[in-house]
Length: 57
Image (cartoon, rainbow, N blue to C red; front, side, top):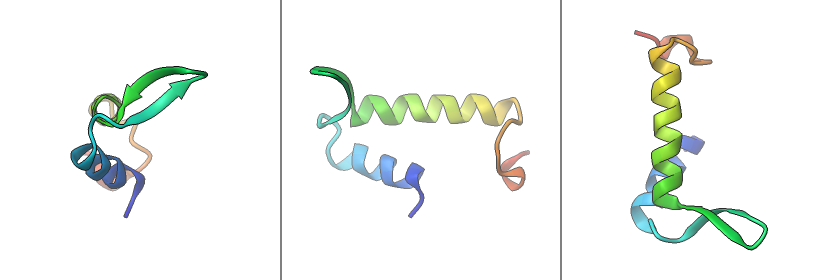
């Protein structure tokens, strides 16, 4: 399982669990972390900056 798939599954199973923190502050739960990661991946893919050429359209 790749990290993206792991994050997607974890976000589906426990979306409100803490995923990212900075010191004592919660930065994002798994749902928000997955949403942000998907947005970044989509933007990179749209600009053809994916590190995986086979994923490019």
